Each structure stands twice: as C-alpha cells, then as structure tokens.
Amino acid sequence: MAGDWSGRATNDRPVATVERIRNRKRARLTASRSSQRDDYWWVSTRPLHGLVFLLPMVVLFELGSIFYLHDLNQGIRTTVRAENLLRVFFDNLGVVGLLVPGVLVLLLLLIWHVVEKDKWQVRPVVLVGMYLEAAAWAMPLLVLASIMAHAQGPALAALQGGGAGGTTSLLSMPWPARATISLGAGIYEELVFRLLGLALCHLVLSTILTHGLKLKDLWAKGLSIAITAVAFAFYHDVLAIDGRSIGVGDWLGLLTRGEISLMIDAVRWSEVLFYIMAGVFFAAIYLWRGFGIVVGTHAAYDLAVLVFLVS
Image (tube, rainbow, N blue to C red; front, side):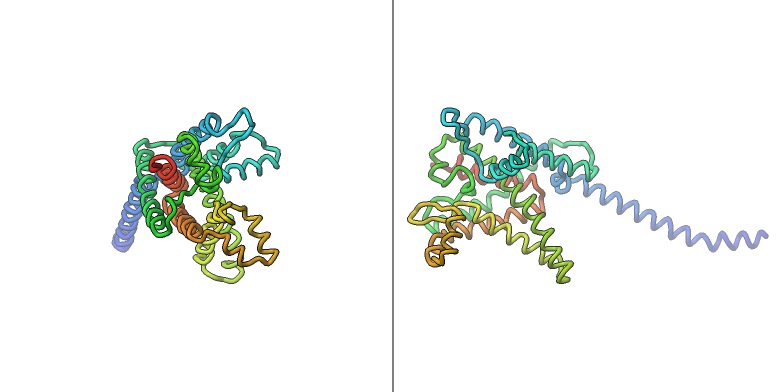
C-alpha cells in the first residue's frame, strides 16, 4: 500500500509542476494584458474617455451655434452640412430639437461604453494627452495642404466646404463663428463618414465580398475606406462652373444630359484629391486611434486653417 501511494505521488509530481508553470505563464500573460489595457494608447481609444473628451466640443458648438450662427432677425441658422443632414433625418422621424445631433454623438459613445462593460473611471492625464495627440495629428495634414496650395496656387484648402458654403463666406464670418464651424465639422463629419459611414460600408461589403465571393475581409475594409473618402470629397464644394459652386445634383444633371466635358470641367480635381487623401488619413486615425482622436484631429485642422492661420 505504501509503495503504491509513493509511486502515484512520484508520477503526479511532474504533472503538477507543469501545471504550476502553465498557471504562472497565464498569470504573467493576464498581468501583461492588464497593464497594456491600462496604458494611454489603449485607454484613449475607449468610449468613456472619448465621450468626456468630446463633451466640451459638443457644448461649445451648441453654444456657438446659438450665439454666432443664428440670425434671429432673418430666422437663418448657419451650420455644418453633416449636422444639418442628421437634423433633417431625425426631423423626418419625428424627433425634433436643436440638440438632437449632439445628444446622438454622446449617446452612441455612452451605449458603446455600457456594452463593452468598461470601468467607470476617467483619467484626466489621458484627456490632456488626447488633446495634444489630436493637435499633433493635424500637423501632417497642414503640411499636405500647404504643399498642394503652393503647387496649385489657391489659399490653404480647408475641410470646411460642407459648412457655411465656400471659403470666402466662411472667412467673412467673425472668428467665433469660424471656430464654431470648425468644431462642428470635426464632430459631425467624422460621425457621418467614419463612425457611421465606415461601419455601414463594411457591413454591406463584407456581406458581398467576404461571405458571398469568399474574399478576405481586408478587401471589404479597403473598399470601405476608399468609398467613404470619395464621398467625403464630393460632400465638399468641389464642383464649380464659371467660378460658381454647384451642387452634386446639378453635376448629375449634366451627366444625365450627356454633357460629359462640362461635367468633368466642373470638378476641381486638385481639391478632390486633397479631400480624398484627407478622408483616407482620417479613416486610418479612426481605425487605429478611435473616434475621439479623429474628431479632435479634424477640428484642430479646421481651427488652424479658419482661425489661427487666417491672415
């Protein structure tokens, strides 16, 4: 009996040792992942920090809209085209209110946070880092715009054609109005083209390409970025005839009438190219660094062009 018990203990000892080694490895791996998920690069992409990061921007945009973008005498409200599209969409659904688009942004991030079951903990140092990072990401786009401006001749291209009309009308506004437009463009254009647009395109394309044609999901992701970048370009005022901006509807009218040469001449191709590259750039930041950072980057660029660098 004693010999049998001793033999079993001897045979089980290596198994127990291997199990302890595995447990230690699992513990180290879990600790490593936990530390990675507590660092700035991870926390700054999470929805709660994105929500707190964007909250001042949403509040400033709404206040700026009331004080600087409303003409009470004529009953006219100037706004970002993307924000107006969202407002019209919700108006058609019977959800009416000036604050609806802003509430939508914050509500989406709040729901995302709850679904992910993240901690209800906000780290101020991360928020400061996010503002600095967003400003840093705007620099390459400013350099690109400067290079293209010197190559093409016109002033710095701004990502604001979807705002209050063309650049001339925007630059005639007081600087608080231009700052408000810049914040709104960052928030709502990124909501429409990145947060919603990329997700919708990827859903459709992954169904067709990945599940239908059995292609890799990379194709669906790449085409989603390309489609939203092109849509982002033509969302801006890049169409003009005799120096007068025209809408996409007028441009398509030329197409249906067979006026191909006039249609092609109406496109300001250098601006289209810039906006497409900007759209790809923003998509890359969104996919890598999250919604909050890409909104901050977009807003920082527009603020630089429309407020700080205006001569």
